[in-house]
Image (cartoon, rainbow, N blue to C red; front, side):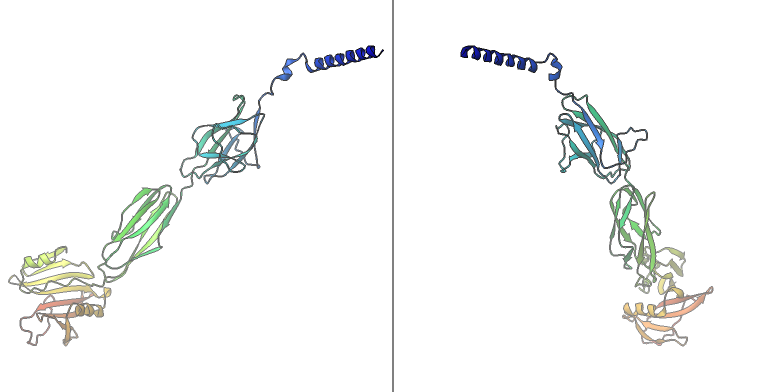
Length: 375
């Protein structure tokens, strides 16, 4: 009985194992195929997607950059590639840059462009996210970026100051991303550059100020939309006029050589005259039988003061010796060869100073000062 019982138990056990194997081996072999690859991409953070003719997966970045977060879900590993110019990086949530063609798990990634410094917009760069197991399973995101906003910044003092002799070069710095021009309101200011594109350095120089008054002008730097003004100020000349030629007895030719650079406005055997270069209206020379014996400088009284004239005479070595009966101050030269008088006259309704230089042959004589140019 015991043996029969054991045989029955063994038969039951064998039957159970057969049934278990049958249950584990279904007839439908398709249940063993791997899950079909899928991939989806969703915009995160409520970003504003431009759908005007671009499709729902089109996003435009500001010219300063920005960030577009994407939630990528894939049944397996996914990868990505770019169709078009690469001007951005794709990073994971920890800020690590993802290489194009690399393989990654589902998660949040971000598209991060840099600043667009170009004046043209970036358009239609497509980013394709696809399943590694089946690259036909893909999602495209098309991105663009606005053109840079034109800007102009001029790095300079609002007012540039120069001494009367010029004497230095001042640089102004332009920071821009577009075309610009630089101009001056007066020709006594010179710019090393008058136009350009982008950043630049402009060297500013000025000519000597030969006037007894301060002068002002300005530099204009502008683009199509912006404009900046830099004021330029130059001190008055410490020189009112150039000392005339006083080599008494010199020829007309020698006198003209001395006045080289001045504009000759009158020329005859007895007198030659030149247009002024500093504050003087003109400088004249008088000849007797072809020999120089007197010179005169004419300055408009409204442009200077008598004190300024006497100061220049004294700085040039002339000594005050008294005044004529009419109040004209008289000076002697250091070499005692020249007497100088400063007389205020009215010519054609305009008050002027005549600074008259006359050659002296006998310094011990009591010479009455006369202006040969007013006789």
